[in-house]
Length: 210
Image 1 (cartoon, rainbow, N blue to C red):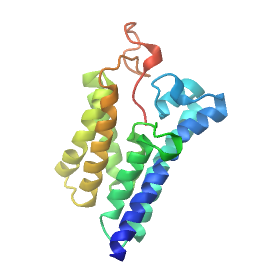
Image 2 (image 1 turned 90 degrees about the horizontal axis):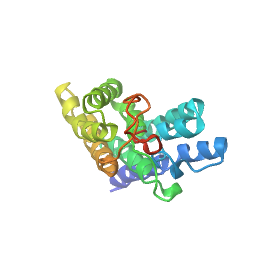
Image 3 (image 1 turned 120 degrees about the horizontal axis):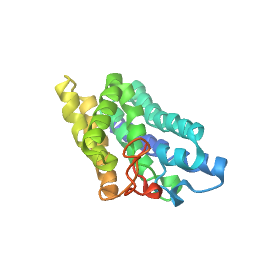
């Protein structure tokens, strides 16, 4: 029972870490505005870039990775149960998407998942990023590409010979990411780097992000 409770405790730590809404706080510090009031209306790296610039966006990106990495690493290093690390990573993504400290209005979970997977399978970060970019180039819609990436992470890692904790994390966090991106499934937007010549896309309602 003590080991089980310890594992749950690391899951709670992951959620609280994920709930640290750096996009909201950094944008407010730099511009004095709520990052969720314009653009994609999500607390993401890309929306921070749109509103507060690339430097602020880079800070948010690093911090969003860290809030997935730290609880997952602590669980991996110190938990008496194996499932605590993927639970902590998954709950960090949940916290990022629905943060306790920001009215449950957060980001999309990609960077936070990236931080978590760096602990258990560093190559998985590059694999996930490559899969996301490839799907975005094919589909030309980042929300739908991100939705599919979330669903395909675990199968992709399995094909690369991974098992156990890596697949648990990819399955759990990937499902959370896919659910989160459903909210943007029909969004029309102009990407930061796709379809910039297409005037039919709306600058003010860009989607995607960390």
